[in-house]
Amino acid sequence: MKRLKEIIVRETFFPGVLGVFVNPFYFSRRGLHLAMKELSPRLTGRVLDVGCGTKPYKSLFSQADEYVGLEIDSKESRERSSAEYFYDGKIFPFESAAFDGMVLNQVFEHVFNPSDFMREVSRVLKKNGVLLLTVPFVWDEHEQPYDYARYSSFGIKYLLSQHGFEVVEQRKTAPDVGVIFQLINAYLFKITVTRSSYVNIVSCVLLMSPFNILGSILAKILPSNQDLYLDNVLIARRV
Image (tube, rainbow, N blue to C red; front, side, top):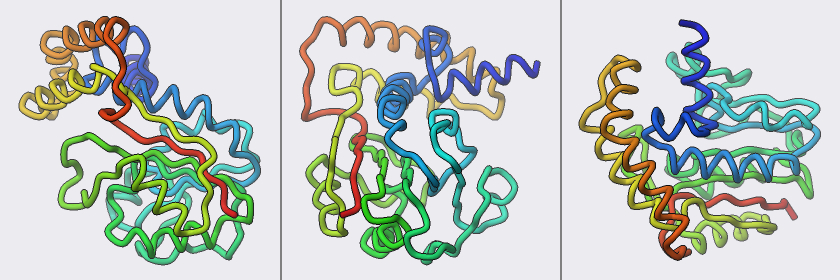
């Protein structure tokens, strides 16, 4: 049973062939994993993961001297997250220029005051510090009522530039027909999800895996579309 749970967790965030059959968010999670795997080695030294949750991508940052997590202080966060630090949602509990790198993974859409938040990001990062940021462009509302925004590639780049960051590299995940099949599966998951992870896996195998398979095949055949995609993934430098 423990081994099965480990496999489920792995395929949730690092989907491979098995993920096609058991992960209803296959296109989204695969795109994020591949992009972060390639870009994460650029973060070295002391790295802060803001909104870290259970730190599912910690293994990608083995080159960091220290990798710590930060979460908003709540009973749920203290019980379920892997964060070492907690804050009030306004001021990060660190001195200025405390970190060499920072990860903001699928967090920014939950920030109500992005300018105030970015001032804190800029404050605790050292000059020339590296920021790895991922944020959805096309996705359904989630973690309601704390889902406030979606960002285009131009919008997020402009916001970063206004707070002392230079975008070094910018990528888009699933810029192809896969985005359509991902939205279908997100819809199917929402109307069939139960409290049992095992029932959810069976539902995915029966209902959603065919769309994962078909979408993967068509993505190889049909042309890409850089205007319609799931997530923005950026590497930015604090200047």
